[in-house]
Length: 384
Image (tube, one colour):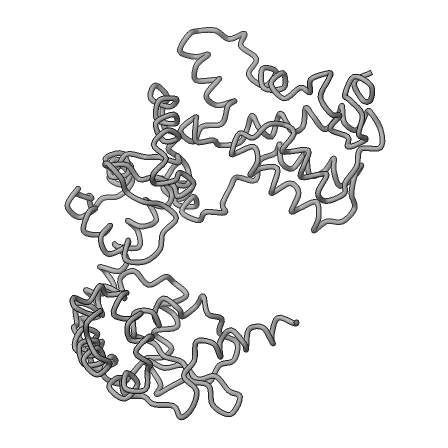
């Protein structure tokens, strides 16, 4: 199935079939009780489970029309959603078959946006009553508060992505060191309450911002990381670089990654897209501190083979160098090479060779399967 057809099917799934209706009260009337119950759940509306359909529709209308409810949703709308909101505020509705659900589902889930499917066309709109409520909000103050909320969210996201686990007080400290307008614990918590009303890639527990990688109920893993980093300094780049980590897929394009990419392109694979994805995944594996076998699996699953012993002997040091210059949670965002350099300076030991130490840690055992994928033990294959 091609992408366009799949997109149409997804959009139809969430749309109201039939005439386009622009009034919120009328839209709620044509919604099923199941849809109204889901909307009520998103707002944790009291007594919703015992309400009849009409009671649900009436209660939701009153709730959604509350200016503070609308304001709170606008504060946490993502950039793409915010652009869509402003587009829909200007017209009764928009015919657009190219929007994808990720652009509007949060707003739809809060009852601010609705879609209709009529005569094989998709229409999107914000109801008239909601537009009236929006116009009553002082725009300058809204935009200032939205910028502030978005900035606080960026710092929380960046802290979770860069450190894995970061105390709330440290997030505030970093924020205040890089911004004139200071962040208080009270403001942090108020922003957290608003932000957490939609799914995030982190959670707040016992005063720590914790990446969703750590299961909320798995105290053992979080305690192990906290124990391992307690004497290590935080890597804190300048504001511009720090906020890049707010995006969960961001990582530094290091010279070591470039060298690995070049070697693979020249000696192992000519498919640029395949090499790009391979190097990206190797960076991810290194960031999670997985063993060499996990790195080699990335080659294996792409059917990229080592045809010569020299190729394997050349690739392992390159991978070790990538690992050494990858930011990892157990180093509080520092790379192994950076943290090794800091330790050397503190102990006045200028002879410590950190890269070589890491190369040693990724060597293959002589009785382990050879990473080249040939099926023999390393000692009987590339290790001869």
